[in-house]
Every structure is written in structure tokens, then in C-alpha cells.
Image: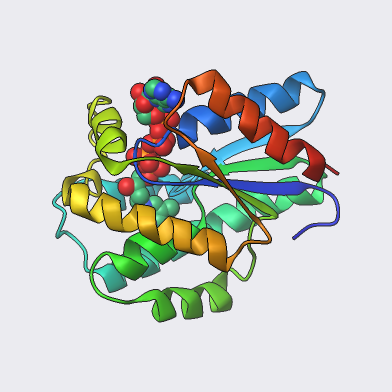
Length: 208
Ligand code: ADP
Ligand code: TYD
């Protein structure tokens, strides 16, 4: 996506360990002297963080899937303009906890087949993919119990339950095949440091 920087996303179901692994990778790369921007979606810029509160809090049926596609894409556009693109242009490594593949899954699959709508809006308004996507793969039961253990207020999607998380897991594994050139899949059901070692080994060869 950029000649200079490197754009890495983390994907996977809720509680799979994305945030933990994104942070550990950022620490590792900073220790190695790299300039790293660690960011997340929805959010990552002031405007997008405001949209985050709208989409992640409240009743599971607060928004239709179609409205969510618009809200997540609006947040992503702001995040891209103000945070991601400037960092890549400056030659930094951008590590993003979720990106457009999450919309392909959560809005594209959870309430009927809206994948075509997600992709059409993505092409129109975003138009970029990460250079590398790390899928932290995990059994939904374990992921959900980890996620629920956090006791936060951003639980709209966790409240959709285990069957949705199971569909998301399968969906992410299918995406990893569809976008095989940029995907690496890592087993997240292991000790944190073992997962982190595999993530680092997968990322290092891609550094500019
Ligand atoms: P995600 O960002 O995918 O939702 P988190 O990184 O927030 O996942 O992890 C969810 C919870 O599980 C956190 O409490 C975290 O400390 C814990 N956790 C993360 N990775 C592991 C692991 N490999 N083994 C056990 N617990 C983990
Ligand atoms: P996140 O904070 O990464 O949650 P978790 O740490 O539990 O994985 O993301 C919050 C929720 O937002 C998550 O349930 C997935 C959902 N989401 C979408 O539905 N669409 C999107 O485009 C994105 C980026 C996230």
C-alpha cells in the first residue's frame, strides 16, 4: 500500500488475543529501533473514536447491518486520512487492531449476506488493504470466555453469542484463503509468548 511504511492488521474473533499480540509486536519492533504507530478500529482518530462509542455500546439491535456498514466505513475513512496514511507516508510501521476484514465478517455475514455491499463501499471510500494481515485463530468458546472476562461496556457484538463467533471464525479462515497473499494464520490457543514469537517470525521478513 505504501512504498515506505508497512501496514499490518490483526484480525480474529473477540477475545482471540489480537490486542495483546498487537501490543507485543509494537513493543518488539520499537525495541528493534522501528518507528511504530499502534492503532485500532473502530477508532484510531478522534472522530473515529466518537463513532466507536456509537457502534459498540447499547442494544445488539441498535443499528441495522446496513447502517453499521456506513458507520464503520465512515470511522475507517477518518482513521485512514488522519492516522494511517500520514504514518505510512512518513515510513512508519502501522499496526492496526482490526481493519476492513472485520466489516467483511461482522457486517457482511452476521445478519444475512451483505458482503457485496461491504466490498462496494470499501472500494468507493477506502480502496486500500493492509500489506500483511495476522489472523489469530481461536476456538469461539475460549475466545468468548476471555472476552467476557474483561467486563467492559463495549459488548454489543459479544452479546450476539457463541454461534455468531463460530460463524466469524469460519469466515476469517475463508478470508485467509481468499486473500492468501497478505494473510498469515496463527494458532492463538497457546501461551501468550509462544503466539508472540510466531507473530514476530511472520512479520520480520516483510519489514522495509
Ligand atoms: P482481543 O483483542 O482479540 O479481543 P485481547 O488481547 O484483549 O483479545 O485478549 C482477551 C483476554 O484474554 C485478555 O484478558 C488477555 O489478557 C487474555 N489473553 C490474551 N492472549 C491470551 C493467551 N494466549 N492465553 C491466555 N489469555 C490470553
Ligand atoms: P474490538 O475492540 O477489537 O473487540 P475485541 O477486543 O472484543 O475483539 O472490536 C469491537 C467489536 O467491533 C468487535 O466485536 C468486532 C466489531 N467490529 C465490527 O463489527 N465491524 C468492524 O468493521 C470492526 C472494525 C469491528
